[in-house]
Length: 237
Ligand SMILES: [Zn+2]
Image (cartoon, rainbow, N blue to C red; front, side):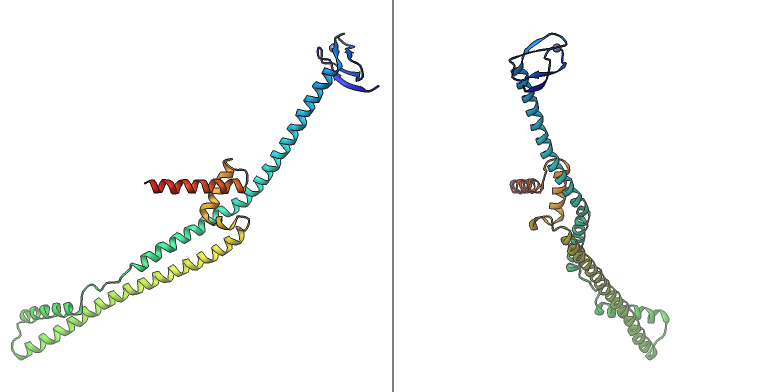
């Protein structure tokens, strides 16, 4: 005799029934039922439960892996965008530096010309006449021109120095960029080679966070699709 535990289909009482019997009888409500039907019902329920548990287990495994991946990504999203900012800053500064031309405000000939005119006015106003007026004129002319040329050259030299200072700061940024990029690349080794940049890292992270992807492969495929779509859109414009 093989006993099975069944529930009475009418009152729900738990019964021990001989599985070899065709019909079972409920001790509580007197209901009579087909044993095979009730056994099948249990098989279906158990089967469903087993299937659901397996499915849930698989989901949990996917989710655990996803959380782990997201944690890794969280640590690199910030540094990646910093490196990108440094890169843009550096390129921007290179453009400024390359188009930066220090210009001399006026030529020495112009300074001498101004000295010439101003010295004539000074001599005329001084009221001095004759040979000493001539000496005064030449001395004032060349002293004035000298001062003006010196001022103009100095202003030009300052501009050149400013440009060199800018270059030095730009080189410092490049150095910082190189160092941070190198450090970042070491941290990004869990991401496929072609996707180790700020844009890709940010996109992959956002796909996972928004449940648009569950793993790296899905996220990368989505990223490529969007890249492709953007390319088409920009061609249409
Ligand atoms: Zn019953």
